[in-house]
Image (cartoon, rainbow, N blue to C red):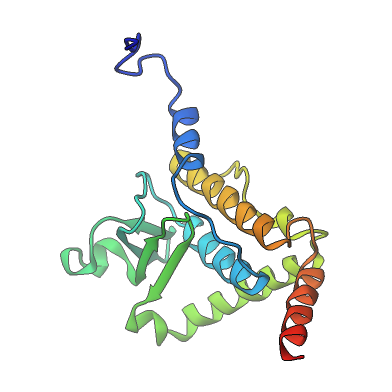
Length: 193
């Protein structure tokens, strides 16, 4: 048995090690159709726009807050342990799934906040315009986000890798949004025959 010459990882690259760990995750990435891809991508990008400085772990709940002066931020601490004056408005609970996509369950206050819902709707419309204008869906994947700090950037890379593998498995990689939707429509009509 060979000895590890560097058991503590000294001199190793945190960036490369983190990205390799995301890429090597033993998750069976299922094929996904365009509607699922676009919904997961929108939600995940919304969560990743939030500031956070920790390594998110799959199947763990995180808490999304919004401060008027500094925007969205993701925390480990639930709202019952932090006041709104410290944390800001509690938006909802986020969970990183094992395929590196994010879910967001809105809090009751966020679900009833007209200003927040309007902002979310504007973001969704902008995302839909990007989908429509992209030559291929793959162009919207966040492979490298310069403005993100380390863990957000690594999470964005893992998301892009996961969704690209799922798109390859479903045969929509390299297609435009309309072409991918066309395949979905063709599949639905052939099942009805």
